[in-house]
Image 1 (cartoon, rainbow, N blue to C red):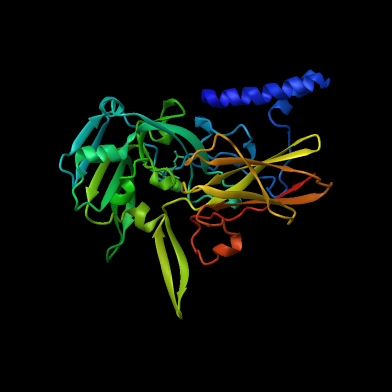
Image 2: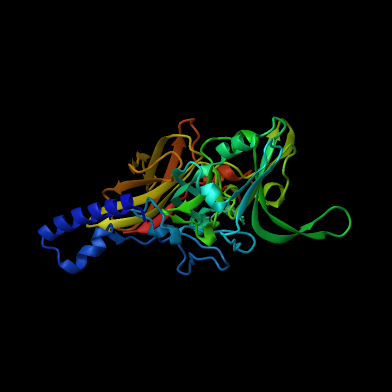
Length: 388
Ligand SMILES: Nc1nc2c(c(=O)[nH]1)N[C@H]1C(S)=C(S)[C@@H](COP(=O)(O)O)O[C@H]1N2
Ligand SMILES: [Mo]
């Protein structure tokens, strides 16, 4: 946990402790209240809901998100990968830059770490996230590394380069159909970015997460972090950057992580099939806590880095009301917000949030997403139910 966050927590906790102690609240009650009050359980979550998926991956139980949860601790940050987690020896590690470059590069981990260090708080989700799984494939961390664009400049991208492909150390066997029976090939994980995206200054070749070395589950020793993009762009166990003049059509660009939307153009139906890329504007309410008759809803917003115009909350189909934004939020972090619910009578209630960005893009409702036929990129407003 960063110093900043633990200090914030201490201040919040401390203020609550002093105030309540003065009111004569018994000592044993203080720690729980200092953490933000009593949790109001969701009535829309099945009793057998398992926040931890079965194999190899990890989820963040979003119900535990509070005002003090701005940075996700490394061991709680969700983890997803499609093959086995790669075990890379940092002593022999090399990062190569090859292809349409004037000067191919090969760097050891030490050489890489001697480059100019940049640090940024970046939140992201897996594009397979959705309300039914409580959007648990999510996290917000402080990443440190060096700039991809500087490395590409050093290698001298040739003007003919169209795409930059990022290959990793993890491998799997893929069945490829090319006439006749499918053939099996061993392939490493790969994703690409168009040159104009890859040369944006904010993209990180990262070796540090929340002040510590990257753990194996998050791509040790080096991974890519593309701020504002869905998780699949953030290639873990990165060891090879390759510039080419053709589009990379590997599994995770062209066959998997493809969103298919039905579109009507005049009287014709076309199928728009796109590779998962920038995070579509999303918000959700993660938890509600109670302090006396004060109910505090806490949630987060994710997006592509476009500034927000508003984050609003609606209780029981009433008016949309503005949420309060956390002062720690930055351009590419998730944006934590809180909302105080007042005048809640006993009984069942609903609560939902919606984000709108500066371009006027409004987070859709579930029914707005009907023409999207694949499960990827579900950024629907999430109506939650609770009882007081
Ligand atoms: N090498 C490699 N990188 C990968 C993947 C993978 O399978 N292999 N999965 C991607 C997907 S789909 C997601 S959502 C993110 C998850 O990053 P995290 O595990 O650090 O949360 O990693 C991405 N990077
Ligand atoms: Mo993902």
